[in-house]
Image (cartoon, rainbow, N blue to C red):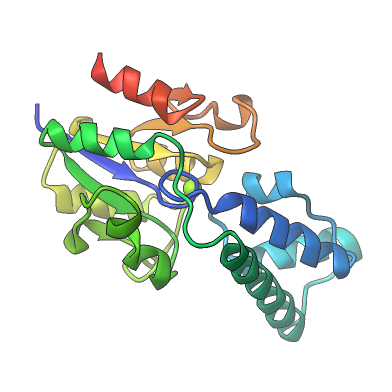
Length: 220
Ligand code: MG
């Protein structure tokens, strides 16, 4: 059976979540807003603006001003870029290269479906990982009106794949991404690459503790 695999990017291909978590936690603390690294993982996929507004409602029972949103988000982005720079470039998720090589060897389609609009990361896919990615098989922030947890990104990938829904498989690491995949009517495999619990990912059809576990499962 012809298949298509829809890979999320942050936390599935690139190990970028630890830096996002540190950057969010530190900057929010400096603004006296309650937001932990764990909250960052739980909320992965939401826009920075929405994260800041919710934290402001929780802490001060009011909406954040446009200036506050802009300032906090700028500080967070600068902190993230600094951390990435210090780490010396892009870090990929353990074992995902093997998963990609295996999936490609089966002749399946490989897609990237991400809420990210970071061109630096997108451009870097084929350098940092096996060169299995094609420009016309990427759904990014630039392609959708509604991001995850809305099903739109995964529905778009499914439509363009030309396959039936039962031939398409989502690989996700975050609760909102899992919700998006399920809302699109697709099978979702979750890989817990961060600090969440298995329960946080329980909406997926299968939960794996590592890419190696996922690879064993796919090979069966
Ligand atoms: Mg992710």
